[in-house]
Image (cartoon, rainbow, N blue to C red; front, side, top):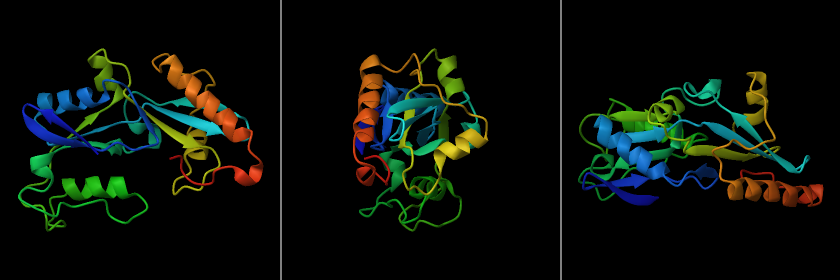
Length: 209
């Protein structure tokens, strides 16, 4: 979690440790809340980085500017990026709701917050108002993408990202996107090579952390 402020109001930003974010990612979401009057803002995935132990390199799947490419939620994007106004998360509660123990905990958590059914006893009042920051909106603001999801090919994960991307016609590019800083692209390439240098028995089998 990261604490920040929008128009003098405290906000809470969820930071997933296997995502890449741009230097102005938090500010872009704060601006979205200020502009729309929403209570919560999440970001649509603009690119997926695949670190391959078998190939020893990084590949990049560029996603459509809007819609989630059939992989990510068209309405919620990546809920693990959620920025929430603190006063609307759990008003007056010393026991704010946390992520549910489900395979898709961030998606389900956002659905609970946005639901108009009384499913969270800690929360009173109407459901949260949500703003999605996707590639189309960032382009309208002349902003570069702010989010890239990073995954290890071959990891045991609830959703098989890369086969699904390929089935939907998304093809990877070994060249990093132009908006990714060169130092970050070099980091991911080095990380993939380091994984490939390990004996197969030591290749990671769970999500990158």
